Length: 165
Image (tube, rainbow, N blue to C red; front, side, top):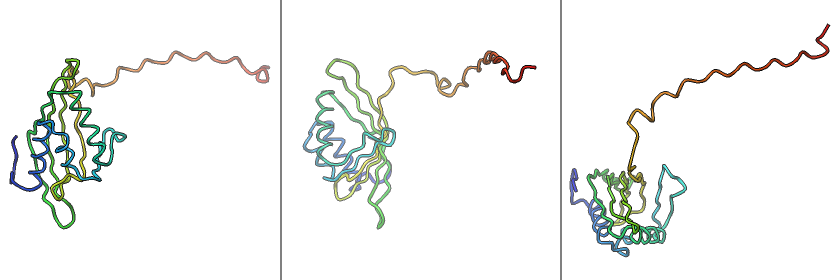
């Protein structure tokens, strides 16, 4: 893991502990990293957000069962230190890989922004998504639309009887 700044800050230590217990597949220790009233936000998929350690336990129990060889990596972290107005925030880039029970590859990458307070995580914003196995060239999503086809001329309605001489 590559980090910048003070690698021994209390907030960084919480995220490093989360990484370790994730790789150990230690569900109880993983859940203990989160505050009882933990708030998960997933801005790109707003309905996937949730509150509470119980949901953390349910989610990770399913993940560990579905991807038994899951390995998590953090390629970088940046810290916004705590102040009188807010708790510390850790911006982190994650990769989670492994193989599902059916043998298909599991690969997710993205950013998670953690709020860290008192050795626990009270909130996080998830921007972690599956990596596409195949993709179109970079220009494809921004290519201009195909030219519009002209509409065929509309047939003229017959004249209204009152308009006839």
